Image (cartoon, rainbow, N blue to C red; front, side):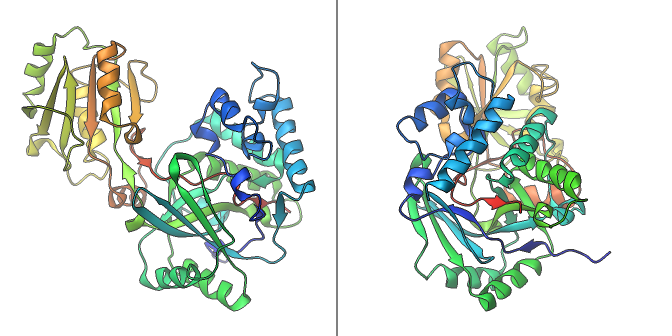
Length: 411
């Protein structure tokens, strides 16, 4: 069988420039139903009416009910009928830039090949949960569209970056503020020669990496498998935006543990010193280097430096800071078993800051907090290249792609 191309252009369903600011919405999976309802109040064109349609049903309605999925499809049809969303007539590629707090990253939006995903040329690094995957399958099937882009990375490539930069010097389709003060700017590349040149540069990469969106890509593959007997091929591709790895920003993903497993604070510190050098600090900080951890315990901040001989650096998974903390402290000392299922551990994205760790410990809802050095993109790609999986909650990407600006219709 011929090796399929990694990517191809597509005819995006998107807001008109006039309506883009009214449509843009946070990703469906970073807001609760109550948060979505509040954000969409008095915003009838918000894409949350499509991505979280239970907000338009009576309070208490399940987001997984037949009525919720049907309402999402009705809301999508309404925005198309009202001219809020329009479909580009020619297959195109799109340049997508996110800017926030002095950080900017510019990538390219396309549809990625499901076959390439199945062949591990679009590589994953996380497990998926069946319930979340099933929800996205129903969402795609009911809407007959993919409305949440998968965040991909590629190893920085000078030729592709130059083409992207040239396209971004043109006039954009729109540039609108989104959640968390992120500016989202989108350009359309539609001239056939330029589309072909950009697509060829993308396909020459050979490998892409899923950064965020494992459930969306897995669901797209399931929908493709269900539809392969049908005519057409658009279901064989999924909506994605890829950025060069050296422009992507991963924040720390920190840990809270509910109790000290029967130990006193002094007892825990004594046990920690068996594997870590411990230094008390006057205030907290995100660890400035790998293999170093912050700990907030009994009103004090400490810096923990793991003994170098305990880090298995040849193993791309076991050498991750999240693995070292789990294997050398959370597991043996606090008896945190599987972090995916243990109710005694919680995870706090770095965007919420160290003050949130202090607040949770001071409130008594947690007994100890750990701050981690952010995982690096090179580590993520090494894990994916080795065909391995990262521990849960290893990466927190900021900024995040918005919902509603680009959708892929399954013709």
